[in-house]
Amino acid sequence: MDDRQLLRYSRHILLDDIGVEGQEKLLAAHALVIGAGGLGSPVALYLASAGVGRLTLVDDDTVDLTNLQRQIAHTEARVGQSKVLSARAAIHAINPDVRVDTVMQRADETLLRQLVADADVVLDCTDNFATRQALNQACVAARKPLVAGAAIGFDGQVSVYDLRDGHSPCYACVFPPSQTVEEVRCATMGVFAPVVGLIGTVQAAEALKLLCGIGQSLSGRLLMLDSRRMEWSEVRVQRQPSCQICGGNARL
Image (cartoon, rainbow, N blue to C red; front, side, top):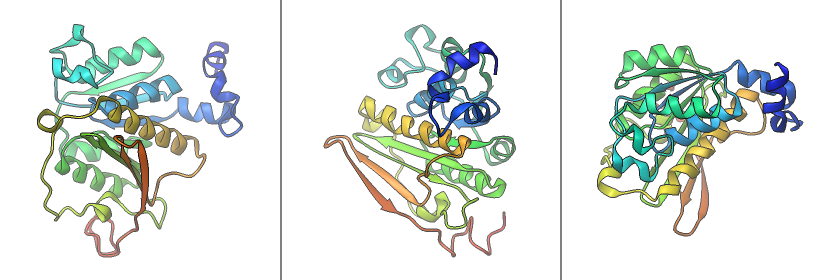
């Protein structure tokens, strides 16, 4: 790090758990963020401000006026612009040193496998079950840690799925691909604006901890938020030997 970086990241460096070594790990790290909306906005901005050296943002959507109630990476001036380009502008306004790669297409299985293989940590900020399952499968295959968040209405949830830990479940252990899921979107159900910020910020914190190798992650724990009561609850989740994705007989 040069003198400017030492000053910029001094409040991290002062933390014994991070220090110079941890900050250098962040500067050398690559985070893959799938989704640049309500969750992806705080995730990307906090990872960038913390000094993660490279971010890859994936989203095929454009900024809409209705997004601005909660998607803090975007502005009215960028309505109609690609979300990943808008988010890149917001990131560079905070930290111009971060390399931001943008992918303006819907993530399919082939693309996800390519992108996940090149990342150090993966953050699921999507809003549909099929993409979540495909992303989980790519992370299991590449043994990359997945930080998954979700939010709708006044509720949110977040966890870490890290197959480097032999006891950690994958996303499919907790939410099997075979289960019937009714897709619920913010466009039809609404979402309390700060909820995506709360969940996305937790996702960013978990990713930074994983990259620095500090603390205890949410692996094996599903954290759930009821913002009406501002109450957090935790459910222990276990790896399932019969899981079709990460079980012993699965084809990866």
